[in-house]
Amino acid sequence: VMTEMVIVARIPNHKADVNNYGSVSTDHIGASWDYPNASYARREEIWRDHVSYVQGFFYFLANDPRVPKPLQDEINQWGLAKDEFVDTGHWPHQLYVREARRMVGEFVVTQKDLQTDRSKPDPIGMGSYNSDSHNVQRIINEQGFVENEGDMQVPVEPYQIPYRVMLPKRTEATNVLVPVAFSASHVAYSSLRMEPQYMIIGHAAGVAAKMAIEAGVIPHEIDTRALTRRLVEQGAVMEYVPSPQVKSINLFRRLFCGEGGRRRGWSSGQREKCP
Image 1 (cartoon, rainbow, N blue to C red):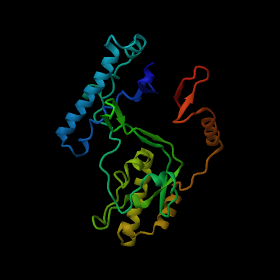
Image 2: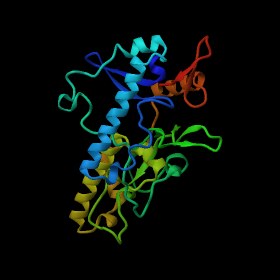
Image 3: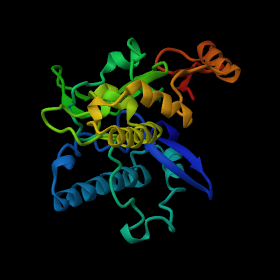
């Protein structure tokens, strides 16, 4: 029952990584908009507000008499890990920032670069995570009902990441490469924001910086084909070749997963999230 409210991913030592799931869950929707530009003091306030929200969410589920008893009993079996984050009351030291300020460079990666225009003349690596955005705001719609807005879960095929994503406009800077807050739209960043892509882009930034210094040019003027070759020599992947195992998994998903990534129930007709 609890898994209808939150995602529970088991990890070693009898612990779990808990994530938002559903319309009302651990996401404090709309409460983090000030965070990117906030002062340290204001960020502390926002952090405490999020802690209060999540505490209240679980306290309600664990104690309110209106909550079904099976769910209440299950919630009461869980608690914060006593050996984690001991100096902040066992809550994480800071918020997980999925997305914040981003550069607007000479080239902006958008949805089409993930879905239709997936090959690039200046590739530095590949991405493949689905376009994944949690809800960004909670509004009252025209019918007077509460509505969450912004959730997006759209699968993509493996796509190439262009070197240009790291380059600022020449009129603004010519001596910097941006491997994390790179030039991407909200939709594109929802896929590119994963840590493996940060490492891939960071690797390319280091190699590109070295090449620019060696050639005595700005990062905008390096030989991008030479950059791609050097990255491949160092183990970077520019082309996706599916293995038999991946083909088998994709076949399984097509056979047993319905629209929206939901698994068809074997007998009851229930639909659960596909792996």
